[in-house]
Amino acid sequence: MANRIVLNETSYHGAGAIAAIVDEAKRRGFQKAFVCSDPELVKFGVTGKVTGLLDGAGLRYELYSNIKPNPTIENVQTGVAAFQASGADYLIAVGGGSSMDTAKAIGIIVNNPEFSDVRSLEGVAPTKNPSVPIIAVPTTAGTAAEVTINYVITDVEKRRKFVCVDTHDIPVIAVVDPEMMASMPKGLTAATGMDALTHAIEGYITKAAWEMTDMFHLTAIEMISRHLRGAVANTAEGREGMALAQYVAGMGFSNVGLGIVHSMAHALGAVYDTPHGVANAILLPAVMAYNADATGEKYRAIAKAMGVAGTESMAQQEYRDAAVDAVRQLSRDVGIPADLKAIVKEEDLPFLAESALRDACTPGNPKEPTLEEIIALYRSLM
Image (tube, rainbow, N blue to C red; front, side, top):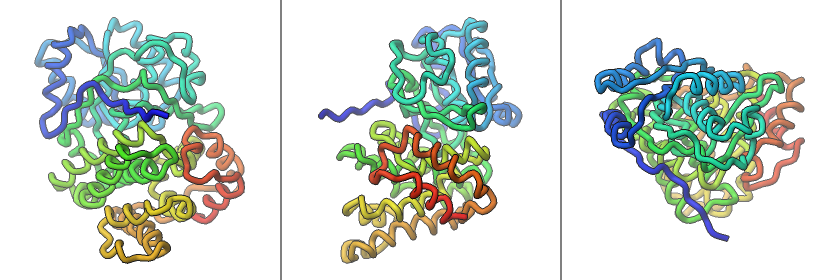
């Protein structure tokens, strides 16, 4: 079986990279942008860093900001209608995963209107046409949605999130500018950074992992371990390191999938609106411990990448424990809650576990969990 890698056509990295948006739009002959960004980013002027460039270059655009932190079917459908009425011919997504996921769904449905119900996009979507061209500009260092073939939408009516996987949705251009992330508060920096670490670790141990994606994931783990604390402290080096690290993690996991940390986090987000990065960070150490006996030697490499000394001479259980402990310590250092006590209700456990078991990320987990095992994992953190 052949292994596949799908990446952006073009990506820009480094401070000031957003200036490339104007050049790319002109070079490609784009006429009008549909700018997707969430209301808070608009309010605090972050989106304005991009629209100001468009204004200065005389490039037309329309702003769409009906986007929730966990974007809904309604956010997508109103966005499709607004795009079609706008006369735009490309999208610019400015924000975290919510803005980029909304833009992906809009771009796919505009060019594949048979999926306008949105729910039919769940799983590996059989779309025929590429999305409307997207320029993705992340403002958080975590989701890597700018380089992935995935997006996640919330079905409010059914109280669940669903994952859509489609090579047609990847942004043609990613613009990863750490200066766009400088205004992130500490809590969001920590949560999105732990989301990136979850991507790297789950991608490294997933069933479909192979040499090229292992290279991306181990590099990302090492960079996140080295830079996340600094990013939370708002150092320039930390911000720049995390901006690149989360993209490198995305290069990997987008092509091989994830596991049940994400499945379980999606369920928490749908039911309690729990921030995705926070949910991942709380779940990650417990799920790592659960998965350990199905990962061969890989936790030795994870522990080493996390900065643990002496991994070469450790026995199997030692390096597995060391990897889990290093992740737990990083999460503690950046202020992530240690458990789900303030989030999960006992009576919701069966529904949460059923949702997680059906999630598109679950088949990639190195172990095949039962419903009872997922319930037990949730309960262990309560």
